[in-house]
Length: 188
Image (cartoon, rainbow, N blue to C red; front, side):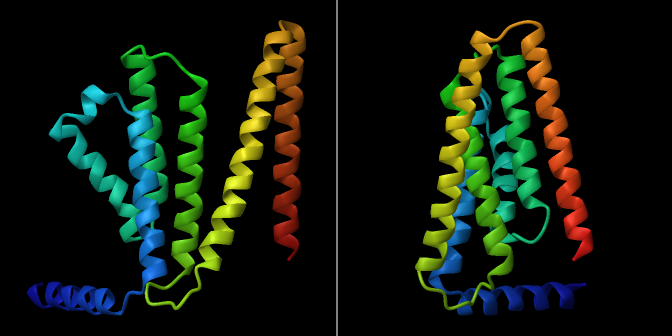
């Protein structure tokens, strides 16, 4: 058991010695996005407690250290749990800026985790690669925010049966698109 632990420590030392700047910065971006998502979602009273903050911090650093695992899902679920605790437990109002900020940092963390999962820690990468990756992600975030704001504006105008009908049509469309994409993936 001690030999296995020594081998693992030696592998970590070798990896740290061979790491290059761009993959390290991407992993730092993952940790930063995780910290921001927790900061936006969780109530400040709980984050100031070390009993709560230390496990949350461990979950935040998990996808940065091991992006190929389930760490990205864990940080998203942790942020969602914090959001539910804050809104349902502490009675915090649901504000548009918080929803958009949480969605943005969760998506950026997710997309950076996907990039880090395929990028070896010792890869020689130009800064153009993560810049273009983040540019596309920010474009998705911007377009999504515009759609959300427009949809919220429509919900104020629509009411009752029309809103329920629009919700059902939207769910049917989302299900149809998912089924079509699934079939397309299976064909290839």
